[in-house]
Image 1 (cartoon, rainbow, N blue to C red):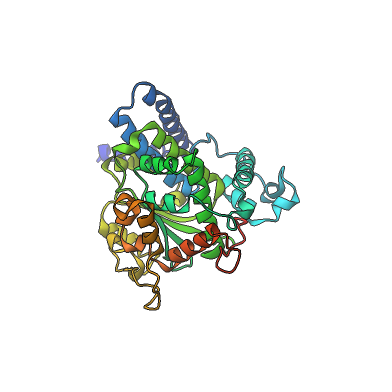
Image 2 (image 1 turned 90 degrees about the horizontal axis):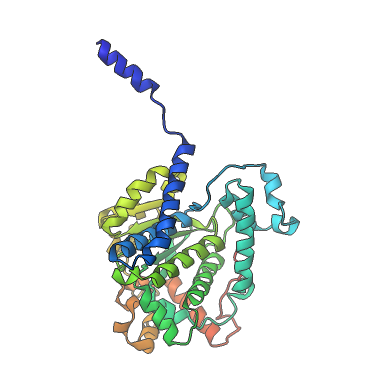
Length: 382
């Protein structure tokens, strides 16, 4: 009895892990991974190093999408919200919605706020965001063909939904270069900026706390081709650009079909993330798990069959739609259906009504149309 009493007292007196210590451990792991980033390719492009880094890049993308800054050592420096809003940027920025999202994503860190604001302004200038929904998009069809991603309706609460299947980036890079794009990474970042701006102008244009997107990231296409240094840097740059350009825009990230190594990384890092972050990132190893998670935000009739739902997008526009899929027509023209990875995806990846509307608006922009058939949003990237 005395021994058990002592054990109980010892258990009660045992210190609980401090959040600060957990965050320091997380930062230490990130710094170690940064060191490996520099060493892995110097020592040789080994398959193991490449696979681990590709998995890590997708993992970092998920956390960045959920609003976690994995590069900052401190989250201290909170100060009054009223002082934050206009700090260093003037009243013009303090009254617009985008800086308010930047304020929220900065979590009270003044240095982070300034860095995010400058990054966001530079992105707007570099990619002419004021006019991005009104100018031609020459890379649209190529990026769509070799990087499967599609709008797919709305959540129960009205947020946009986008499905993505990252992987085989070397094919995308080569396809862009073969068609005259000297900087494939810039072309893809511009494309993603257009699609995301379109979604927030036309699908969920609401102010905070809305104006968000549910991202379904299917990792089944990841393979050894994604272990090249060029592919890794491409993914890393794209993830960083999305994080800078669209703060506080993600409703949820649902990762499906993860490789086995991803689960190991997730089990290591997830205990170090905040509860709010974990609530926004879900990793689904099975179809049943994916269905269960997606049903929290989607009706089963709107969930694609590959994720346990009952959606069949083909013909969703009704019998009056005689034009067929604009995506499939484009894939045939680019080089044949067999040559385009997106063509092998189910109809949900190209035939949702919102996705078809996006294709029609992009085609109108590329045809030089300035009428009602063009992109409908203002392009100001709220």
